[in-house]
Image (cartoon, rainbow, N blue to C red):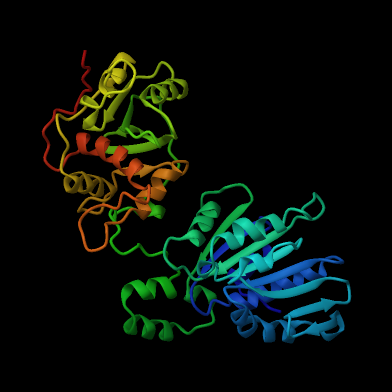
Length: 409
């Protein structure tokens, strides 16, 4: 069973959880079949599953290829009704549908392929398959999973792929276009490019996680806006949004005209005093300037009528705060202009560990049919914290001298 170079790269990767994003006709089913057979014959009494979005899809996509690829002498019994193959070494390969997650519970697994995971409910993995891989996982038998499919927006499949891309332990991420697969002639891909709109073509053939419709921070691109950042010990510039659940802050350093976000702080069921303590714990004896929500001037805590602004000032921080809120549109435009200016340069970069900030930038959208940001999804807090920082330092209409932090007393 010959694999292409991209397929071989995936096959030879020994990471426990591999997430493969691939264009149409990449050869996903063939690779899945090779993986299933290889894992089933490597030892006795192994349980290997192929899970498609539905039982019908599992049969239509993978059954014939699985039966046709298995050497007859390996097979003890097949059952097309249950889509199960029992091998002579005691191992079993089963094809399953993910439409009823509860029907998949209760089995211990050695290996599983989740095909077109974008079309399944997230709990198929988190609540069913992942626990099933725990029972048999030992030092001598590493249970594994392969996620493979075409992207469908930035959903739960995207979340798992970014774990691999970001280098999370036990995870690896791959991305291959239809052309990379080598199974479709270039002229056919060019023909599809002429027939399809850009969004559909990029998703189906270039295996790109295209932005949601109505995305607010459209200039954010993970592959260009996220890079490992080095904290040089210089002054910290921290944007802050006041909210009890959660308190949110983005921590950055300035490099000439660039803002480099090196950290984020998210504290649930908290208050401004606890945020101050957390900042001082993480960054002791460090010059710090805070750029808070302008509401800090009026917003009072329950402790003696202190304002958030006075708490920050009394903690010894320099504070820069507008007299009143900038319009939401101007604040969003300020962030987008830093994410990528008209000349194509990026002046706002994020360390990969700022996961909540990155996720929020990728996913916050406008309410359908309006120019109002959606604040029901929970993605607004980190974006607001970032916006207060960026809007003060690099506003669309500059109103402040920003060269040196000022300290209110």
